[in-house]
Structures are given as structure tokens and as C-alpha cells.
Amino acid sequence: MLKLAHDLARKRGFSDFVMFTFPHLVSLYRSAFFRPVGITFEHPAYRCQSHVMHLDLLEFRKTHANSVEPFAQLLLATDLPNVIV
Image (cartoon, rainbow, N blue to C red):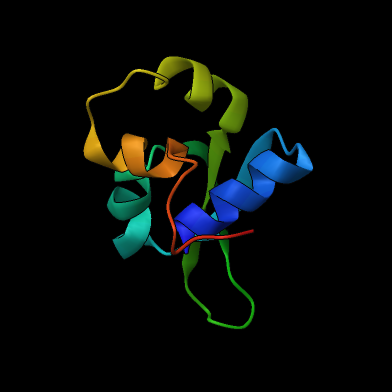
């Protein structure tokens, strides 16, 4: 899903992703290159703590253009036949 979102963002010219997630998923999104912005809040519907996360897409593309990290390579690949935006 993140690959699809990343490709759509690239094609539409988005520069950043900002999202919230639950505490048990922060490490997952950190491994997907998101960074916590230091803002937490009580989610009104889920009634639990939520953390705001950020991914600078332009910086990510510059920093990881020649990365050997498999997940970065997947996100930056433009020739995958199963992800078409």
C-alpha cells in the first residue's frame, strides 16, 4: 500500500506525507522512513494515544536514490508490473 501511495505522490508532485499512527506501529513506520514529529494526541474515535509521523518525499528520493536497502529500492522502483498508477 505504501508503494502505491508513494507512486501516486510522485506522479502528482506531492512533497510530504503526514499521518498519525498508534504507538505499536511507530517502529513499523520508522522502518518505512517516516519520522515522529513529536506530537501525540488522544484519538477521539479510538480513544487511544496517536503519534504524528512525517516523510519528506523529496529528501527521501535524494537520500535513497542509490540505496542498497531493499525497501528503499522497492519504493523508488518505477518499473514494477504490479503497481500501476
